Length: 636
Ligand code: ATP
Image 1 (cartoon, rainbow, N blue to C red):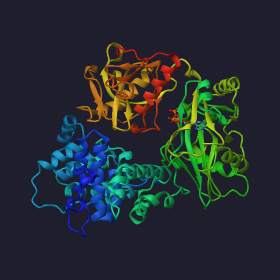
Image 2: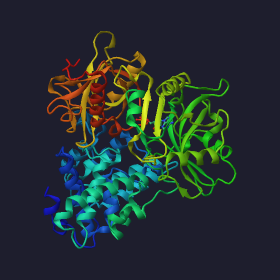
Image 3: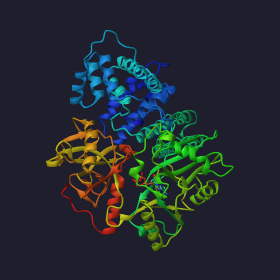
Image 4: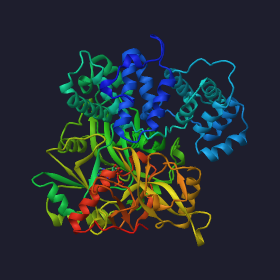
């Protein structure tokens, strides 16, 4: 746990020069991280791990970083392990000579297959000490497991998992299993991995950075790392660049690359047209319809093939063969390579009408066949990020938009440009917002046009503001929250949970903070569906990274597995809930009043839930707009 500046990386390595980094080195660091709740301490530990690897075994850095980020390959490559808990249980019985029902029973008490694996291993007598696992070996095996396909693939996968588990000792089985489940559960977000890698790079520089410059250099490096990763999320390229040229050269070397999705630019909420006008005073801006569908970043590669990426940079091409098929008709002659930013919306072509989001969510997710498609979609394009070899991220929106209009063409019911209006007149914008709602959109996104109007990857930018119809008398925007616990139902709802405890995500502290209890907005069917799904993720104790008031009296805790979109009447300061604690009140958190469930957000992972900072911003905005907020609520 030594501070980064007091640390001797070479002395920390317990393996011989020339050997690969033992997995136990990383697993022990994971153990230390799981005992910490502060982001600084976690960054510190991980930075020291990376520094040790850089100083002694730099060729293993990629494997160590990739495993720390809980990945096996970059998200856009769509590499998946393809194993479920049932397979893992089977492997545990074989590797550790235990019975299936013993494992299941222990799973109930420990709440985590990783802990079961560790306990099974500890109670086993070993005749021979197995060959130590290395980080490189673990990652290679994961990649092989992902590649196994065809007839005997499940057997092959299990064989490889068993080999790993037989070789794992001490705390290693815990993390082998959790990595196999793609869930490390130690509260370590990718943001911390990136920060730790940035710090490690600065602290490994020769000659050493003088102490007087260190703080500034660490901050600068974090920023460079974050920006580079949002444009090129590939650890291999990033690590090669920093090892060879240092972090200051990183953004020159790692650039936007066709075929690799950039993190999508996101919008900030506002409470009404007048707030938009306030924020964008003296700026040229444009209002666009905010379509309610699914984000799609469409890449047309040099060979003419089309790839589609989701909001999370995941490979989504298999879901939309109809878009792949249609794209060539939407491009004007002479356009060969491009990246378009769009919203895919379910569409009734006969009536020429946008259909609700719920219709889109009934489409298959993978391997969809063109001939089987029943729900048609229309693509609404709103940005172009790359065209015929030219990256456009740094161009202003008015230039990008002109290029989009002149390079693509609308195809009725298939491909349209997002409806846009350039106006700075309050009434005109209000009217345009009404039009958007009448045309089945969620509202508007208002974007700066010619100044401060570059494309900001992976950023919730002040230069994109969202405006929804019912902003004026509610919290302004819906929130995306994570169910972390539940309360038993009474009366009619016996057998399903009666209410849930929701949490937002504090990015800095890497913890889920309780924000409200929710019991309405559910149809019976939805309530049952959510109850059944979440019942599979019950854990005996709350995670170490959950924050909540002790008086809440939760009956059951869940793993952080899904995200719900929720609307509320307003926000208030709460003595019980912990959302944004320290941001608007030193000891109290913020809670939602009268929350209502809108829908499940399948496109977001728990760490992408509304952040504590966003909750605090909403609270402050509400106070300015209505002069209210601040009353302690009674939390029910
Ligand atoms: P929300 O929580 O409001 O549904 P979000 O958190 O996913 O959205 P936001 O930044 O709030 O992201 O809203 C931007 C989203 O709106 C984009 O990710 C995109 O999918 C969608 N969208 C629809 N129309 C547009 C448009 N014209 N320009 C940009 N994004 C649009």
